Amino acid sequence: MYVLGINAVFHDSAAALVADGEIVAAAEEERFSRVKHGKSPVPFSTWELPERAAAWCLEEAGLEPAELDAVAYSYDPELALQPDGDVRAGQPPWEALRTLFVWEAPGFLQTALPGLPKERVRYVPHHLAHAASAFLCTGWQRSSVMVLDGRGERGSYLAGSWRDGRFNILATQELPHSLGLWYEDLTAHLGFRRSSDEYKVMALASYGDPSFLPDFRRLVRTTGDGGFLVEPIDWSAFAPGLDSGGEDWSKEHAALAASVQRRLEEVLIELAEWLHERTGDCGLCLAGGVALNCVANSRLADEGPFTDIWVQPASGDAGTALGSALWVAHALGDAMAPMRTAALGRGWSDEELGTWLEQAGVPRELPDDLPAAVADVLADDGVVAWFQGRSEYGPRALGHRSLLANPARATNLERLNDIKGREQFRPVAPMVLAERAAEIFQGPLPSPYMLFTHRVRDGWSERIPAVVHVDGTARIQTVGRDEEPLVAAMLEAFEQRTGLPVVVNTSLNTAGRPMVDDPRDALECFGSAPVDALAIGPYLVRRPAA
Image 1: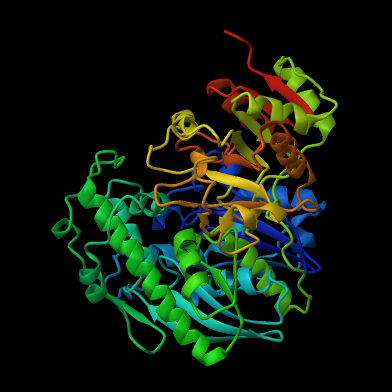
Image 2: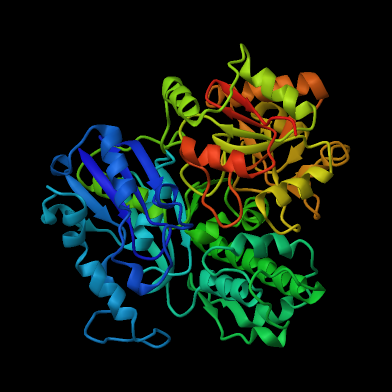
């Protein structure tokens, strides 16, 4: 059974292919188009499809569109505002345009994928697609599920229970009440880009005291029935709005970010407690854009009622392409295999990479031991662009499209933020072998997808200052030897040279650009940024001395 999943309605447009219950390929359109998030999250962009991502997924499996058993589209127009002008409170008049484009999606898809019969397109409710991207990827026979984001068709939240092949919805929350949109509103107020820069607010929150928390406990509250209310908020009453870029923030702005972040964490715990009382499950699956808030995830793991928490690494809307494909495949009778890796995107053979370098006229080395050669550069305080294997699905660089550096130099945080063109209050992350993580970091382990924050244990902050955030935490990636043997070898080689089992890992891109995906992107990034070396496949490219 071949099912192609499509996300195209809001932003982070993506495609994913499931074959006989196995995830074959998944990629975001931004990695092909080089437009961040694929497109703007506005109703008149809904007709735009992830055409290149979908074509690649089919190519990866050697399929023609006519061979697909179904195409799953992660939005159900039956549940949305209709094109007849049924405009609800808080919804703009052009909302119906979005729904109109969704109704026409089968025709758009047939045009984009010639040979596809329109009747094979199936609509999957947006939050169900998010939920399926979590519970169908864990391999668990039972779990509780929470989906929180800005919005779906008419709602912003779903809680449910997965039991032996059946999913039951236990609670939902209708618009205009939305924790995701609430956080987005703050993002825009602080001068950042809505539906894009919420992680910057999360980072800024660590610099402030939650002095406005009593106000937000009154304005944002759970209702005791599995839902919540978000009252209208005058953000200027707390701190003046900032211009685009958010660079001129003050203690007042940091306090506002800290207060909203803290209240978000509290509400998630209250919602989880309500859900746990009804399911009694040990495990909780999370998806939706709010699930990318790793600070909230960690507090939920630490103080919430669930023993185990699994977060979909592509929790944003891109993940609904995968979730919708999994759900339809499940409905058609396929048994789902667990999601074993987030490395589901494009990859190139060593021969293909060598041809790219030769055509670009780039001098390169072919070291006998690439991890050792990279460790030498890092130990000498060089920055390395690391391009290996298939690219990651989701917003985190997980050792396939990464920038690596030495964590012992505190100045490397500023250096990497300068290279990437980022705000200086933003942290970078550490990667560490899974078996070494517990001696350095305290928090949910293992953490292979960088979706939790961890306390840095006593004695280590001074040794790895570049990866320690202002609040004493780090958003770690644990590396398994079986899953990532090349990264594991590099980490071991680096420790042999420095005594440190940790390396800085941040995404291989510059400000406003999607993560590097193909060899051309890697060469352009390496050529335009002050990076010392590029490890691409088996090759090492060094920057010529000035």
